[in-house]
Amino acid sequence: MASPGRPTRYTPNACDVARRACMLGATNDELAGLLGISRATLHNWMDQYPALRQAVDEGKLHADAQVAEKLYQRAIGYQRPAVRFFANPDGPPTEINYTHHHAPDTTAAIFWLRNRRRADWREQVEHRHSTSHELLVILEAARLRARPGLPIDDKALALLAPGSQASAGPTDLDTAWGKGEVDDHDA
Image: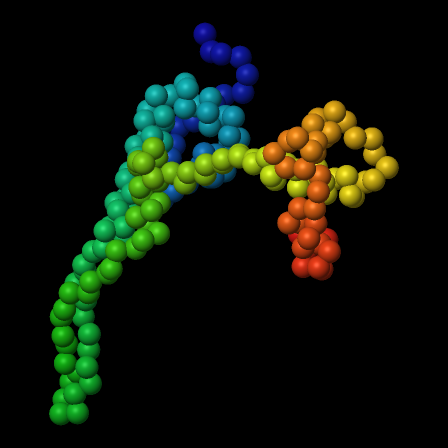
């Protein structure tokens, strides 16, 4: 008994089209457009027809392998045969065969290593948060100067108390401010 609904437009030819398109780098969206179907239908077909799934996977694997090979060649440098022609005043041009050397490409090497050896080559950004007591005193004094009408909390009093490591007396910042060495945006 046939399934209800519109008959499928899938044909075995879709496998060949899919393999070739994926070898050229087509995405699933582009492949669906090429086959004249929606992306959802393409995914349904790939679930229903294992031959189509295999064709798409093989095409993408082939394309990815070629790109990886070329990227690797750029990363380590490579050689290729080349030909140059030189004008000859006495007759036809002279043909010279030689080997052209391409130097390693640092960007390709970094890209390769960051993708293949993530733990060793990722960009590590380490944030260290350390605050000295002196800096806290300077910041608290600046806060009090900026907003003199605000009430002073117990934490600020303890920080600025005469018995603490630094007092509310003039700081290097206060001295520099008085001399005009500090702009408003520096504080």
